[in-house]
Image (cartoon, rainbow, N blue to C red; front, side, top):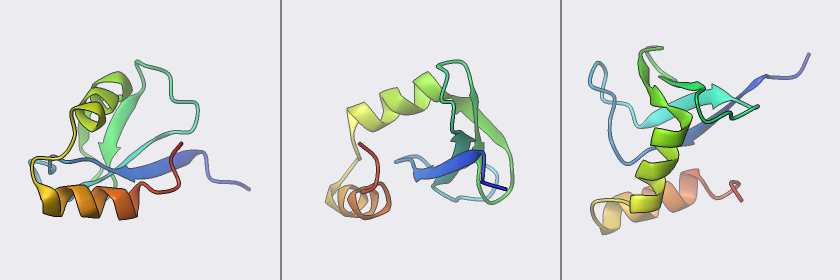
Length: 74
């Protein structure tokens, strides 16, 4: 069976565990919930996560980490 979700990295950390890795349904509807991949806390909606990615990282280190983690994203 194939995985029905996709992981990516956000520039902001989970308030519960500090992880930047998040998980969303492969369908990626704008109103799909985005969850922390580590502790499963609901963080935001998919369209809000995409806004965060469009705004970009806070510094150069974050930019390099996101580029490496999200390199498979179109």
